[in-house]
Image 1: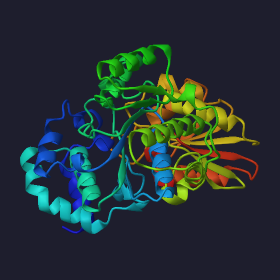
Image 2: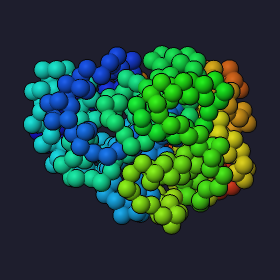
Image 3: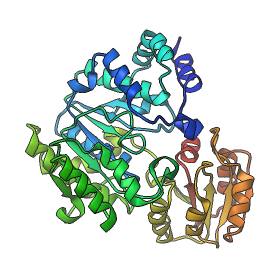
Amino acid sequence: MDYQETIDWMFNQLPMYQNQGASAYKKDLTNTIILSEHLGNPEKKIKCIHVAGTNGKGSTSHLLASVLQEAGYKTGLYTSPHLKDFRERIKINGQDISEEFVCEFINKHKSFFEQNQLSFFEMTVGLAFDYFVNDNVDIAIIEVGMGGRLDSTNIITPLVSVITNIGLDHTQFLGNTTELIAAEKAGIIKNNVPVVIGEYSPETRNVFLAKAKAENAVIYFASDLILETFPSALIGDYQVHNKKTVLQTIKILQEVSDFEISEENCKNGFLDVVTNTHLKGRWQILQYNPKVICDTAHNKDGLKITLNQLQKEPFSKLHFVLGVVNDKDLTEILPLFPENANFYFSKPNIPRGLNAETLREKAYEFGMIGKVYNSISEAYQEALKVASITDVIYVGGSTFVVAEIL
C-alpha cells in the first residue's frame, strides 16, 4: 500500500475515537501490551516524559519538546489528534515521521494488527515508540490520548509524569466529577517517578496526593512553585499555566537525570516553539483586517479562558465560525458565548460532528443568532465576506473545525 492507502486503511478498518467516539474506547491495556511485546518492547528503550490533562497537554508537550531541542537533544514528540496530516502526531525535532516509515511499519505488521483487532490508537502508539527507538532519540515527550490510566501510552515508565489540569470532558468515559476524572489522569503516576501537577482544585489535589503517596512518587504543584515565566510564541491567556508546568518539569528532569538545560534554552524554547515544533491552532492569528483567530479549545474550561481573552480584543463586531462534536454538553459551553455576535454554524467533516441545524437550534436558546452552512470552509468564507476590517472572526468549538480552515 502507498501512503494514502495505508492511512485510509488505518482510519477505516479500525476503531478511531476521532471519528467514532465511544465505540473506539478500549477498557484495558491488554492489546497495547500484546503489541509492545510483538515489537520488542520499544517503550522500555526510550527516556520519556508523560503528559496528561484535560486542557493544555498539547501545548505543554510542544513547549517541553521545544526546550529540549534548544538544549541540543534529539527529541521525539507524540501527540494527538492531528490537524491536517496523520504524520503530525509523530515528530523528531519538529519533523513529521516519513511516509515511508509509516507505510513500512503498517505493511510489516498488518496481519498482526488484523489478527489481534488492534485499534487505530494502539497501532499509532506502537508506531511512535518503534520510530523513536529506530531513530535513537535522546528523549520523547508522550502525550496521553484520553484519560491516563487506560490510555495506550500508559505502558511507559517516564522520568517525570505531568498532569496539566482537570476539567469536565469525555465524562462518558472518565467520570462525571472532577475527582473521578482526576483519578483516571492520576493513573499515569508511577512508582517512584516524580509527578508535576499544573493546576489543581482542593478536590483534585487530594486525589493526586493520595495516588502519589500510594506510588511513593514525589509530587510538585507547579502553580505554587513557579512564580515567573518567560514570553512565548503561544500567546493564549491559558498558556501561563502551561509555561509554569513546563518550567517545573524541566527543573525536576534535571534533578532525576543527566539532561542539562539552561535558562537560555527555556527562553528560546518558549519563543521558538512554533518554529521548532510546528504547533498550530493555539490562539493562532491567521490574518488581520479583519483579524481572524482560531483556537482548538473545545470544552467548558478551555473555552471560558479563550472567550474571555477574545473580549479583550478591540473589535466593532464579533463573528464566530462554530462547529462541535456530538458528545459535547451544549448547555455547558453555549452560555459562554456572547449574544451580540454573528454566528456561522456548520458541522465538522467527521462522522461524530454535530449536525449544524441541531447546533443552531440549541444556540438560539442561548440568544446566539446565526445561519447554517454546508461546510466549515463555506461558513468561514461567508464570515470573511461579511466582516468589516475592524471586526474580529473567531473560528473554533472543535479541533476539527480549526483543521478545516488551516
